[in-house]
Image 1 (spheres, rainbow over the protein chains, first blue to last red):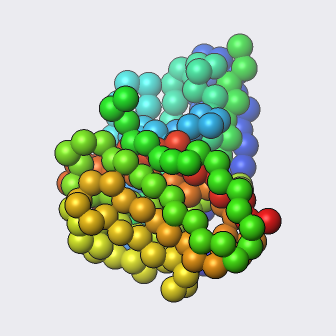
Image 2: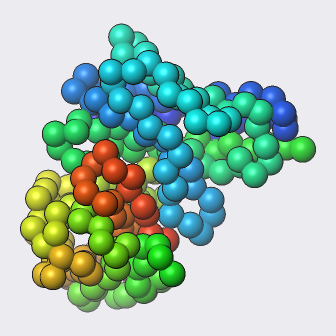
Length: 112
Length: 114
């Protein structure tokens, strides 16, 4: 069973506009959530995280929103840049279990 | 370099052979994680270590898979009697100490079993 779901395999956005990537989870025990970015031929790179005690975390152009009641999180990138084109993975964990559960990824393409 | 390194980057083997995949974590990182990533999927947890102790191996698919980290640094993931379904990207990650510290991923080893 897929505990972390990214239902959009791809997203295309114009440079300067907002990119919104979505993620849903099913396990109510998850209390820590992360977004990773992956370029071709490289390993995933940590982008931003959020604990379940918060509903928003911001880092520069990147903001993650958490809606615990809906078991939904989203990553907003504003403004989007061509260098943001990559695959974005959502991940979740229960901090007591020390392992990440990843979604299937969303490929973001930001065109000039 | 200062990042996580993995070797070999590519491994092609015949069904039934044993393979050993190596991970060299960032110096000083206590925690080391192994993941497997199939095409079009996200990384799937296999096992992790704190220092030399294997803390959780619940993600290892069967007893053909094993991992060790004898001196608390370099780790080896071994797959015995490989099968075609073992073909995947195997990724290693390390973190300073535990889950809430950032996991830094290596470039992966692409394993192909013929």
